[in-house]
Length: 237
Image 1 (cartoon, one colour):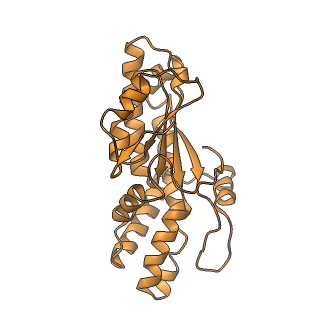
Image 2: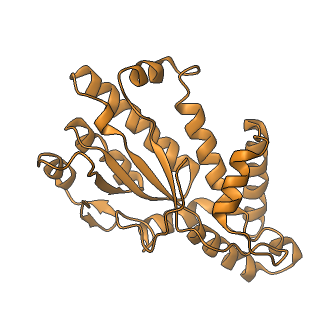
């Protein structure tokens, strides 16, 4: 099911009202993956329903959702709820982010801008996946270890809105292949990914592009919200 929104925000009381109804165990309450949707997660989870956030475009938003998810699971456990049925997901969109960033780079012009085309979305996805591995690592988080022992599942990433990339060299590998290659290849270190992200953000800002504004526009546009725009599921992490 979907929770209705008003200007990108869940309509007052809809998340709570939806969670009071009885649903199939496999059905989740869909919320927009923006600040308002993250804030609304506790309502359904606290009443025994999983959630599906759509569509996320940044690792930062995923980390915020994961923090809210952990807090809601902690409260659910204290209330004696079974945590296994609360397993939830976040749809992470790739192509819309590159489309928007690439268009701004094309407007800036020049070989330096062209070299950055097709790089933003995959980097964001890799950062989100690394954040998920870190947050939901029982060896690193005693809090998550206790929740996992009680049946909790990590907040799963679902890759959506895939398609052809448009990198600078003219080749067109797809996102799914790139993400699979990353899964099977040598893992990048947290420090290496962070440095890569800082470099890309500095370059984008030099061209007058503010990544956080692009993400916010996508979250509140046709690709954000509980319907998530045109989606093409490409696997989970």
